[in-house]
Structure formats: structure tokens, C-alpha cells
Amino acid sequence: MKILGIDSSGLVASVAIVEDDNLLGEFSMNYKKTHSETLLPMLDQLAKMIELDLNTIDAIAVSGGPGSFTGLRIGSATAKGLGLALNKPLIHIPTVDALAYNLCGHRDMVCPLMDARRNQTYTGLYEFEGNAMHTLLEQCAVGIDEIVAKINETERVVVFLGDGVPVFADYIKENCKVPYTYALAHNNRQRAASVATLGMVYYAKGKTETAAEHTPDYLRLSQAERERMEREKHHA
Image (cartoon, rainbow, N blue to C red; front, side):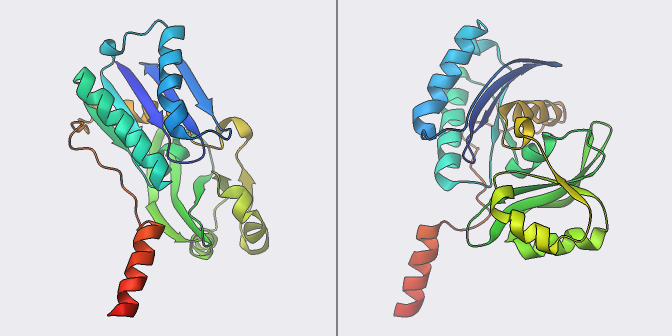
């Protein structure tokens, strides 16, 4: 089983190839470039380095949202284009689930935090029983105050990760009443290897879709859509 993973849902652009229990290659960038410039060249370079014929992959796992609206569209378009060209199924992986999967096997409760601006975060709560991930709170878009309040209610030790950590660190320090830690640099951002590995689990359960069927899951309206609705409300 060989899965291509793609994640461009946040600041990181990442592609990976996982075959059974082996990560054959991963290319991740978290530096100033736009995903439209980097994603396909990264995949092309990775394929050359590991002598990969893309026709030999079984499926394409893509981080399907929530996240950056532009980033998700680029990742989605890339996955759909490859799926159509190669005639391969897609696997829609929830972004927050994939982020939590970076810490597969962790003993503490896992809370990904993606910065959704305006004190909002894309988040969820997860725990692991061995390598099996259990969702305690499905991915959602909420205020940082809401998720920290839920964590306090659990009275459980928690580990935070994601690009929301530096944004909300002060709030967490002042308001989180349970012991907590932060994930380290090698696994605290989106990784296509996690998308692909979780994609293996989904594939085994038959949770695939065609390239034509795939659409990103934004969880909330874009800023442009919110502003348009505000204007329409005032003119009504």
C-alpha cells in the first residue's frame, strides 16, 4: 500500500510518500513562499529523489480542512488534478485530526490549535490508546476561551501543538488550569507524513472519494464572505 500525502492547509507546505510501515520520503517547507509556487515542485523533487512512478501509488490523502482558505484550495486543486490524471482515489483527511496524529501514541490528551484569527482557533481534543486515535471533541472553529474552558473541565494533562500555540500562549498561561506541555519543533506543525499515515487507516476502512467528489471543509465563512453578508445586512 502506497499513499501520497499532501498538506497545504496552513503555513507549512508538505508532501510525503508512505508505503506500508515506511515513510519513503517527506518534503516540508515553512518559509515565506506561497504554496502555489512550492507544492508541485516539491512533489516532483521528492518523486525524483525516491525514484517514484506516481502511477504506482494507491491513493492520494489530502488535508481537507479547516485551515487557510487559499492553502486549502491549492492543496485540493493539486490533489484533484493528480487524482484525475492518475485515475486514483482521494482520501479526505480532517486537518485537525492529521495534526493530532503527529503525536500518535502520546500519553496525554492532545489539543491542536490552528490560528483562525480574531481569537478563534480550529481545534479539537484527542487521545491515543496505543496507536489508535480516539476523538474526544471533533474538529471545530471556536474561541480560544471555549477550548481552554473545555480542557479545564476534563482535569486532564494536555499537550498543545499547531501554529496557534505562539498566538495563544499567553492566554493559555493565564487561563489553563491543568498541567500542559507544547509539542517540539519536529512535530508541532502540519506534516504530510501524518496525513498519509492516517490515510492508510481511512483507506483500510474504505473511506475514499473520487477526485471529482472532493471539496475542502472550511468550517466557517471566508473573510470576504463575512464582509459581503455584513454589507447585505446593512443594506437590507
